[in-house]
Length: 141
Image 1 (tube, helix red, strand yellow):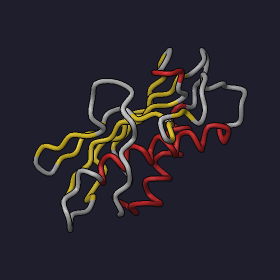
Image 2 (cartoon, rainbow, N blue to C red; image 1 turned 45 degrees about the vertical axis):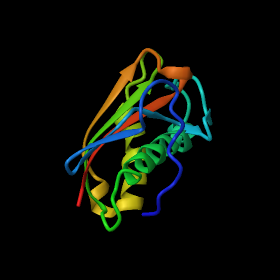
Image 3 (cartoon, rainbow, N blue to C red; image 1 turned 60 degrees about the vertical axis):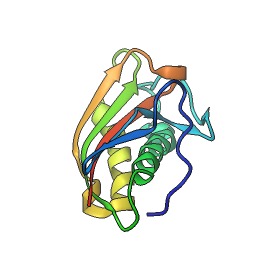
Image 4 (cartoon, rainbow, N blue to C red; image 1 turned 90 degrees about the vertical axis):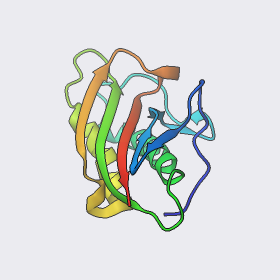
């Protein structure tokens, strides 16, 4: 994969850190060039596809942070863990279906290496009122 510009941090942190062959990302929201492409809580009565682009942008930001930690000639061997935080309104109950958009995106980019152990969590709010935030742990080889 080609290196891209790192997502712009919204605080005092780095997009990703590396320890040995493990790469840990910060939480990534659906920002493009530092601006959220969608804001607000995820609504239970809206079609899930309403949030697909935002979920994929957050996953893309996390993936870019990982790729930028790779040395020349290395690749992502496996996404080990995927955490998907959903800024969900009360009563929203299909977090895992929303998280499937992130898994689908990672599989498009990485093949079978994009399927990870995963948690999809509903939260009361996210930074900047983002609808979703994604954090990953990957293995490099």
